[in-house]
Length: 147
Image 1 (cartoon, rainbow, N blue to C red):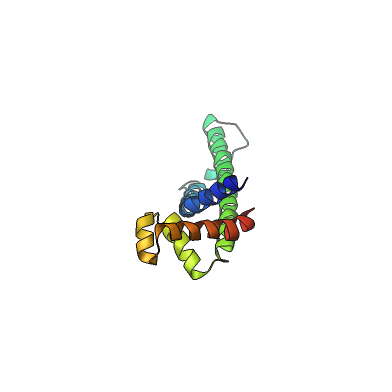
Image 2 (cartoon, rainbow, N blue to C red):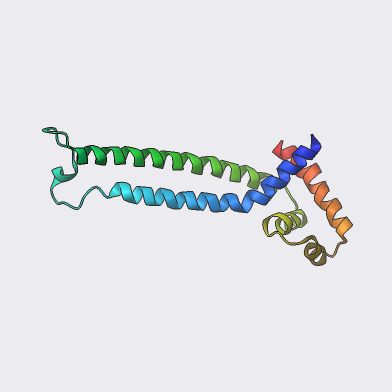
């Protein structure tokens, strides 16, 4: 069970930078969908973009279906953004409990993906010392807060 929790926390930490990028990309997708929704027609005639009741055209039906699909797409994107932002906030809340030294170690290993040798050089510790500190941070500090 502890190994699963350890791996889970490491996975969360490794994916943290990716989560930020995913949120930013979803926001761009939403912005694009909003722009498309805003383009209804270039006519000065108020009725040009509205549906006609006199007859039902294939083109009009296609436009209405396209608008429904865009609205569904926007809704899915908005829900995805909210879900990922909540995940991000939870991770940031947990990381906020770490000391500056602990955060620096986590950041170098999981966010910047420095090699263990490089981290040991920067922090002036042995590999064994680094591994013990990393394990202590994850087991004692992070697992209880992520579980």
